[in-house]
Image: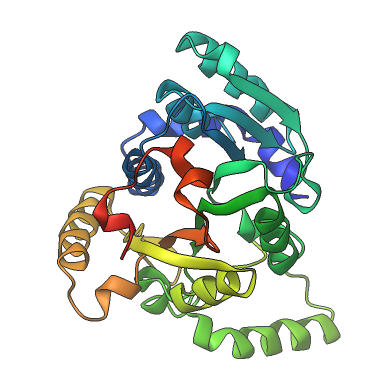
Length: 286
């Protein structure tokens, strides 16, 4: 069902990186922060990157433009077409290999990848734990992984009674009673199956031997109340102000963004095993 949705919405994913609404700005921020983590890794022409769930291909192309060899992997053929177009447009088509496959069964040798990127992927897979184990299988000792997850305790969900995760048992009861009474309910389009709080995501990665090096939580909005969206201008104002406060370390806000991103590292390796990544900065060794 998720693949069908992304097939229908392929062009929307290509275009959203040029849009200025709050939801698009948050996804653009996801790309920017992931690129920031990649920049710190100082990729070289010997670096092998896997972008799993590559979508429109912007992250794959960004890594290739930094000199790496990239495996762009997605389950949706039309998304891979976008990645191919983007890579050719940016002159790195010869450094991006396209593969239609799922994260549960990656067509990569064990311990063959230096940097693996999975943005917005875990929400849509049947088993996040199985996906993370497969990710850990294909990365080398000492390799880096950049993973994101939607945050169920995001601020915009907490303030909307219809979105609040702590009220979910009540909503399930209402749906059950409506079904027994024969009351039809609207059918929703495919929605993410799995979201993880910052601590849950970090524990999930740790369980597969991927230790957190750094993390960031971001994105405030679009805000709704009883699913009625706030005016775009007000929503953008709130997002910007709240993001500045969160980035400054304000208690509470720094864990209530819409998306949590983790830079993690697999196990340990000798300098000789990771010299093709170049030397990470001191900020990566804490």
